[in-house]
Length: 279
Ligand code: PXL
Image (cartoon, rainbow, N blue to C red; front, side, top):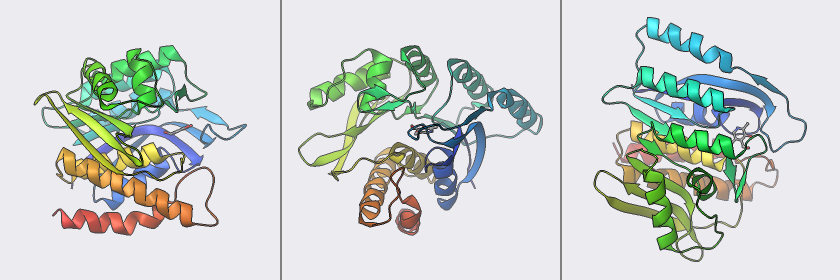
């Protein structure tokens, strides 16, 4: 069984970060090792949330794992807390990087042209350096713009996305993937650049007119889980994009849906079935 380490916060209530990554990655048949960077009562879209920073635990936990000769097939980072913490995570990646493992970075820090409340531009620039030590990065357009000093646009064409992908590639990772990319009316999906083959790729499905919190974490968890199931990049991104879209659809149909996240729990059986078809 592949072993994946994911480093992000625990938002106790809120259906994002570790409470999404852990169940999804486990359901995909991959051992999920977690490194919680903070405990929050909820995610930061709630008012009056509490935060307990745990970043002083990263180094002792890492040192213990090193003394046990633990190795990871992938390291997946998501929402982190501070610039200092990003540096600590970069050190951890350096310590656990092997020739074959996959460093997958989701620089989760904003959406819709804005950074989340806890972050500023300096934090975005620090996240760009984390992207530089990754094999694969999956920012959305907002995060890409803050990291590369590009202008954020609500409406754009393929040339704008290609330009953003080239700017992201300059940060240093081999494969760069932009999420939340709409290349035509009524469609949404991802577009990527494989810098080794120098090839663009994209996947689009129907856009559902709803925006939910935590869908980026759902997408990233499934994408990295699918890569750990040995799916190709194209297949992994398709599985992740379709699963995220199906989950949003199911959530919309739930009359008692929570406002703060998606009902990803309801669609896990279909995800497992989909993966079986690739075996
Ligand atoms: O990736 C979403 C996320 C994760 N964790 C926390 C958040 C958010 C989005 O706002 O606030 C704490």
